[in-house]
Length: 305
Image 1 (cartoon, helix red, strand yellow):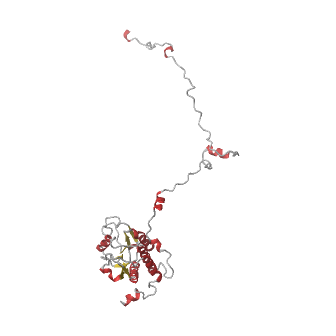
Image 2 (cartoon, helix red, strand yellow; image 1 turned 90 degrees about the horizontal axis):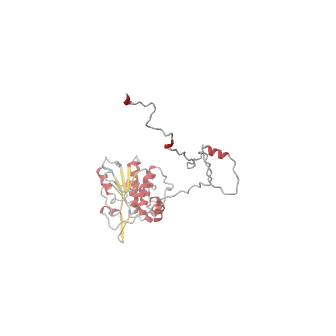
Image 3 (spheres, one colour; image 1 turned 30 degrees about the vertical axis):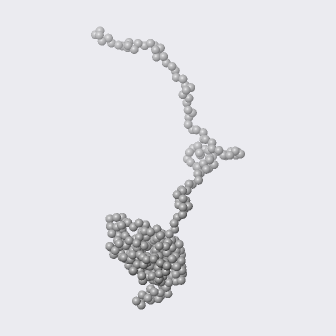
């Protein structure tokens, strides 16, 4: 217990909760829980006010550090699978995977991803991190079949069955979900040594927030960009291997005040013959010598033999 208090509960100044982080969490509404409280989440509730449960921010930070240490202890970052089926956490999951090297599953979780070895999307992760235990229940159930530890962001009314590390926070707010994923990614990078604790991380939390596209942006994406047509009349002719083009290129240009126009090149084919002007000679078939076709020369009278 003393080791836990010294290492996790702010005994080390390096791991202590900073004032800037507290301001971010309060501004994002991370401490605002739901009206209902699960009996397993009672220890994380500071007090209730106006049917709203106030989450202890210090305990949220402690569980966040514990989750970051578990993620950083895995040798291959790709063995960490982060999942979010809700729209609010899909962008945060993709950004977390980009900055930490984890494997992201944004959108619908295909049943059998962890248990069915036949399908192409089969995965064998060593750790699972989910955004909402209620929405990502299928992934949590399958992880229990194959003994995969689960880290989940939990609200005060979230089910914690098969969840090994629950990080108490508000998962119903866009800014709260994005900020929690940003804090987790920053702590993982710091524990791995990729980012210094002295300097601020250059990545802003806004990149993890879900942003809904407006109607104007959707219309701009729907309209394709059309390139302007090239000026074929006043453009310079391209150099080709044609004999006519090479001959015209050597001729001196004629200066004139008239605008340049397209002039058809002279044809290189022979002149077309005028069939109508050639009158064929008429032949009288009956006037040709009046030959008797029946009297053949050298004919033999077969009956006289």
